[in-house]
Length: 418
Image (tube, rainbow, N blue to C red; front, top):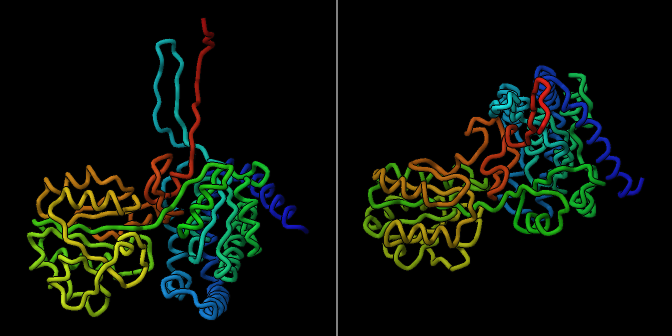
């Protein structure tokens, strides 16, 4: 079968499955998620074997350390995937939820009710857990999906997809509710961006700048974009030094390859002499510090930061450090370099924290907490399909409830319009 026909068939199959999934009740969809989790655990050995082959091929190709970390699966991560599916099943049903209702003076009763979007197209790189997260969230929200992972994770994605489809079959749902593009041919992405003959209702890209830019430029269907995580942690002059050091160590080093990792620390000039040596003591041996001129005075191991560093999502043990005059200067820096993903303030002054929370226009803004909380599971969403950094439809971690639209149900007693 040609690629054109193959992709068109994927779209038709997803659309047909989505029509069935939309009518499936909550118990059936939750049973499917539980069965999917069970099948992931049963298939752990084959998933790990597939991932080992992907890791070997990726290393031979010279994939960077952060991307290798994103690609890698182990027993704990597979168990995390299974638990994530179970967490999604335990969430309230987003379908049929009544957001608001009211009655007009003429007696008509209006209800705004959540409904599935239809078919979600997902294009992503490296992380095979996205296959399960996206598939699970789509099932929960009554949507079918067409998934296109990166070529480096093809074997891992296939093994996970096989387990997910087994769970769907076990629950009596069509296995084509979750579809995986089986080829590494980049032309397949073009077909998805064209909408697969109007069968795809939303495209979600999750990856580097080049991928997201291409999708936003070429897509003929709506796009929910996940941009780079150019995240900042700002240490206000009122910060508790030990608390700030602890939080930033986690924000940078818990996992450097995730999009919630802090890339730049901004420090008020009033506390640089106290804070920066403490930060260097805590993380200087584990992380390269790239400092501006003012910060370098208080650091013994730092290298000089370049302007490009502040525009770079390192996804590695590299941390930019800059000194700012005050909160206004910090806000200006974030406005210039931030990507609208996640930014945090470390401060004991609640008034300063409120200014920061109100004025930083990012999807996630935190006070006295690690930027690594940029995660759907930590928000109570079970999992996420990505972190949306735009301002339309959904923003921040995109969970099942964000993969819905709504319709109005209107109940009358014979009213006619004069």
